[in-house]
Length: 207
Image (cartoon, rainbow, N blue to C red):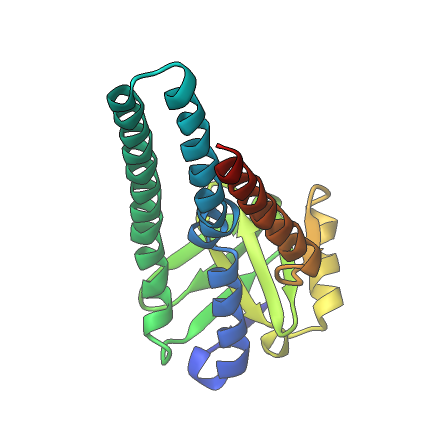
């Protein structure tokens, strides 16, 4: 089974793939799950130390511990974001050359993807996931960080047949449908953030 596609001829499909990569990037997950909540945690922490300062510790000790905590927190977050940003720069190299042509070859045992910048060859049994987005399929491989994206209209057979073909060779394959960030997750995030802010405000008023 041989087929190919070019990002320049599949701009909408490739743009959706890039949006998936950006939306599912670890940097964004760190920001959504940690950094937004960080303000609330810091406010609660400050108010708790106000209580310690009032009843137990000297002012300079409280200030030193608070500054140490904030400094360590900022350093850890910056290191995490910097490491992930370097990783994202490597991913972005895949998206620079939109005029390249990706050539695919698949037989009963392996799948290959090749362009002038890279070459991937992997057994079908090493495919861990196929993620369905609106315009195509994203194939994830065991022990290979780089995904394989295939627009649906570039497949030589129907999308369902393509997936079934791989499923027949790989019984452990998982097929998922990507729907982006759900409203439930956003609602839960907002509740957590505002809950922390309310608790911090109440503590501040009491103390």
